[in-house]
Length: 378
Image (cartoon, rainbow, N blue to C red; front, side, top):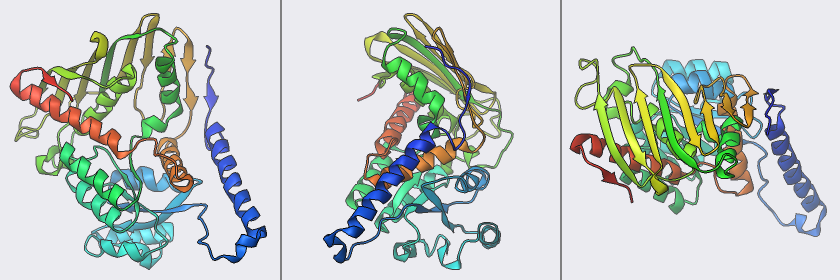
């Protein structure tokens, strides 16, 4: 099983499948127009969904908005911001109509705007629950950045609101849409290297900021909620299983003047999976760590970098997996996949339940770190 380097931009195999799917939809629409049923008034299905970004910080500005200039199944239709100067600059840069620009006070009026199909919540984690529920109540599909929320209870409330309003909910785990990730996961799922024996994963970087929401407990700060979710995902994707317990965990900081009030700058934990498989994870705002090692019976799958925007590289006894692409390919692929799922009425690749699983693990890791005890997961 030899994987050779390839270039996967927006003319790659995934784009082809998306175009084919859209051609099928359009062809079906053309046939309907020629049939006697065409006399019956029907609402025309959109071939692209309008997306409104809520929160115009770094991720929206530098990654999501540029990605929405490259997507095939969705486009930047609107924005929600509390900063008038940002509203004005985005309006000019992306030609956004005044009627598609909202602030946090009039946000609920989006219910009356047919241009906007999807609300993408890109706010500090403490605000996710409120705006996901408000978007769902407005009848809009919702994409929410990770971490999904602060507590598992908040996650469940978000899922319930979307189900009640019959709208889709997806969590912004870009890596699950990424081709290199999908291919190493296939090796694990198909047991091409035998059973997984152990996993080690690290996700982190040195964050020199001191006043960002990531250093603010009330806003959902702390490394485990942010980069730690990548490490938890690595353990889950690397084993292909769900953990049954947190064996042990430890939180620490070398900058107590920044990471105070119980915030973690660095967290380590050991997760236990069925069959005695263990995963050691590390996440940090104090050092650069970016790897995933999956030890199988017939060799080790190594992913390094494991979660970089510019791409992943996978090596194993089966060969190299390396699909090249350019930023912001991952974000565009994620949003195109999710938009197509909505248009085709198919399940989301990363639904709200996936975010809920990770927050349950986050809560268990914190509990284990505080108690010094093993914590079982339901």
